[in-house]
Image (cartoon, rainbow, N blue to C red; front, side, top):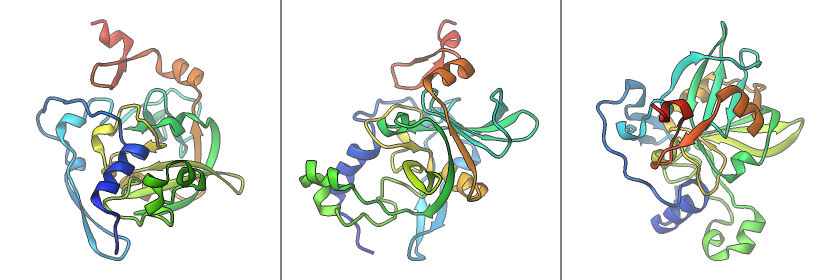
Length: 241
């Protein structure tokens, strides 16, 4: 399989999926086992090593955890809150599995409901004609597409949101930059740690309903949040303590 040069991959990551800066975060203790390294099967059947997530990136809001869910959505729904930077997989008994997410500009450009109509393992990515036209030096070399793999900004898995038969261009996917999870980024849609999207992908059948919250819905259900100097969100009440 032919991959793009490393310099181009880094540039694409910065343009499409990574924050413009990566603040230093102090190391903490150990990470939960679900965030250990894994070996997955790549697009051509080759083994791909998925690195462990550094404990420093696993803040309390970033870590996958079962929480009480106070939204109106039915079990089996995926709820994306781009303003609180979390994703809920709604469960029975008023609970949900919560995941931390990175949110790019495209992640706040859509609100409402849709359906997962397409799922891809190690998805490929192709820039739009407008992207190639406006930034030919960056996107021209991959105008025919960047194959899926460990250097692809979409990461290990992708879920594609449709309304009726129309692709909304809204994506829930992995990332090659785990330091971005929990933060607002320069571009892209909704990104999870690769370990999280791997498991969410397996648990999400085609036809799953997705609800993307508005800013007002987020404020009502999540309460006021503030951003820390490191770029993460925390409840306003917690910051006052």
